[in-house]
Length: 210
Length: 210
DNA sequence: CGACATCTGTCACGCACTGACAGATTCGCT
DNA sequence: AGCGAATCTGTCAGTGCGTGACAGATGTCG
Image (cartoon, each protein chain N blue to C red):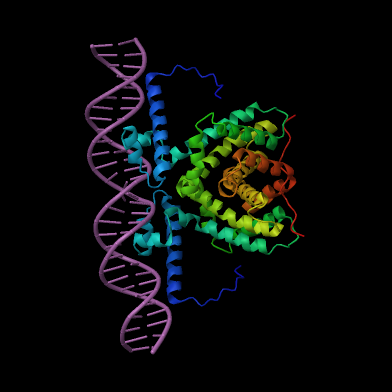
């Protein structure tokens, strides 16, 4: 799952930082699920890990950032999955398989699937988390469009098509997630995403009603 | 521009409220452009209109809401423009013309075009405004997808295609705006939006580089 | 004019977030 | 091991956003 051959030579300091970071995330999600996002204060999260609230803000820029940290990781996973797709695949098709693949991995519980399920709950519950999540997605669109441009073999700034593809793919994913938690809670997100991308591939300029 | 035949019988109280609301918006944009969004406090905006800051929050839910109030109005304008499109037009084509039409109207300065130009500046400058703007767009997607569904003559909740179309169209618009303020400041947003929608109509599953 | 609804200012408060400083911890080097 | 340098952390003080509660001002209607 992490084929990047980063040397594991983490110093003591690095390991400590990583542990407190994970502890903060765990404590935060624990509190968010029990009391809700708004009702949870940063002080409470910090106390649960026995650090000062000042330290919390040295790890996360805001309370919302804890909630969206997992989503950010998913974006990074999609980048890896996209690189692994065969080079000849059309862009939307490659994006489709990369996204579905990552979502299935999370659904299988290879990573903490409890928090994975919790995130959509948080986005739905709290407008602040929703806003931060959307902002983060927009930030990642630059990177994603660069990779799409590389696949197409075009200039990522001059040609608007990679940006359009990245943005549209992200939109399709958001639709899938929203549909999942609103109208189709029984379906898996990966299946809904797969269908959404299939519609994209087929073209979306539907005729008006007769 | 406002063909809705609402009777102009506004009471004194209504008119006063409308005036303070507009005064707050004007003062806010004035301060935002001179000092920047972050550096402007709600107290300053309120003082400029000679009301208490408490009153400010009775008109706007947050400081960001003032900045995005104009964008919200643009969404409403698009709804009207969409209703005016011929019924037989395919959905993306209808959306394309509706959006371009509204954008051109703002560029022509039929409404306050100074604030119109300022908004994209604010979104770019302040992450908080960006986040709120994206959130507002997502809120409006429900309404937009309902109208797309009506055009297609399908059920807006059971059929995922209207939601997909609305979301994708919104994404295309965002790409156009981003490209405008980043790489093509000489082009008009309406033209860039027109081109983005043209790409959508043509399909976007581009082949990989040979 | 008087009863009523609505709007507004003042006060008090909680919480998110930040800069500055000092003490503790770790690192790199001898 | 020991020492100086770099980094991390807690404490403190402060700013600004946003909200409930209450009282007074203002508009509304008979």
